[in-house]
Length: 299
Image (tube, rainbow, N blue to C red; front, side):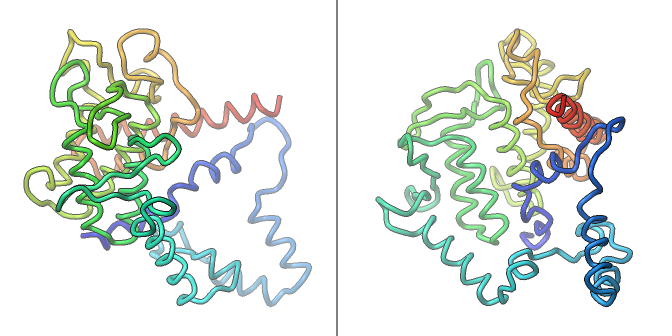
């Protein structure tokens, strides 16, 4: 059911928060934000400090406590009604607004839809992924099903070197422009796809748990499935890192920082039917990778 997907709210911001919290272990660094906030509260008001400590005592993060912070309410003082109205207005504009000046979601027939890249007048896998993620978070199953069916119908590779993957670039007619896979777009797509495993097990292409697992299998075992083709695994088995392009040769021999999404891997480690230990190690590898990059940036 969709109610089980609340954990995915604000996943878009996970990378920025991870980068902000990373630092080299051997070099001096400022006190963590939470410690600085506690010092400030202690100086300003002992009563506020007690309230802060009481509110956060014993919490192991939102996934453990079940209490999800709403920063619009907490930091901006907005009411629940104001926040919901803002979300509703954004949804209405982007999904059902003016065809030429507002919307990016375009229904096709009675059961499909695509997300338009308005800057290029085409359809790209990351846009489809974000549309799916928004639909999951806002409990919009009909729209999710429509986007997923369009992707499965027109972007999915049914055969050839990249069987099991999705083309990243199509025309709005469904014609594929480029069937090659860029690593970060695939990972973002797969993050959305795996999230919908919580939407329930339907039939056919709407058996989301089975579809999600099939995608994960391709990402890790592509070369075992089609050993004589150009398609490669999405993740390097040795480093546990996502590759630049899953294509046999140089493009699958290195990674790109912007492709790393450890929060997704953490969820796959918890919810996938297999390869859970690999996904757990992949999450750790990405976080260590960020720390090394942060060290280089400081140097």
